[in-house]
Image (cartoon, rainbow, N blue to C red; front, side, top):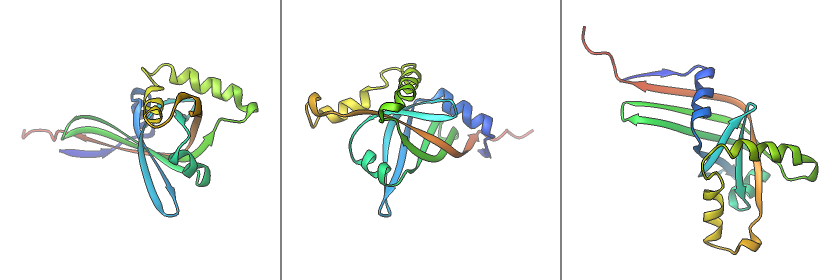
Length: 152
């Protein structure tokens, strides 16, 4: 198996293909990682969520990361990590940005399901606070594993 770094354009291509990742945030030196459905557009990561622990933590510490994998086998995979800043699109003057977030997320099948299903298991629809946020990308890195070429 050979492992090599992905160029930035290759990282962007992986982000454009995938729609499920793991969001990492931190509060009081305690990390928290949760799966999210996302869309990559406009050099940002867009996410639909509901209010809960991750939102509280990201409001307190906006430094976040998103990790995605495209796995074909144990020896053939790509992994990308995005580091950036949480940006909640909730103020009334952010309606254009919220609309853009919804538009790019609507290209993903059932983009809203994870956030609402988890919350509905605990509370009624009347107390669910849906929200959109984006991650402004500061940096991204990626690795690719591939089968080593056979003997010649």
